[in-house]
Image (cartoon, rainbow, N blue to C red):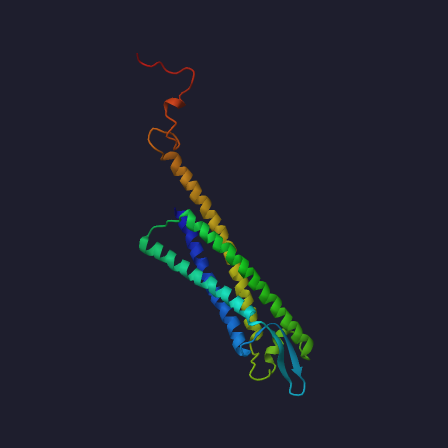
Length: 234
């Protein structure tokens, strides 16, 4: 029980960390959208106005791309927040840890779903940011790295002051979130094994009276040696 509680505390800490990562990722993507007039600049292309020395967005991706990343991050954060509250209540108020196999299976399913969507969101952020940066480096003169465009002037009302840092932060938060959910999956598998071993142990030595190893059909008389049995009183 102590080992199971220890694993649960580690899992609770991971849920809290995943909540923070989800909020950071969603907030970072939303901030970039706000600085670019609501546009989703992932996979975007830019132009450079050499006369005015300004960078402008030639084309942007569909808003659904950024909305998908934000929605996945918010969904993970909400679920992690709910699970954290539930286990804090269970540990502090009830003072009793009960992990039903059905609920563990449900969390395992959620874990698989979140890993799938976080993988997609992370790839979209990585590829979309690289596509935008390639356009900036190849179009804007005297720029060799994408982050240098943060110090350049952009066409009003666009604000590219921290677009690269925000997109990088969002991508990092998504991949860290993905890694934490891999650890949670491992912890759930370990807890399922511990629960199964505990049930097997208690069932073997605390079985019904008159039976051995939890089997009521096996009695002590049936386990006596077949030969050289002691003589029974007449």
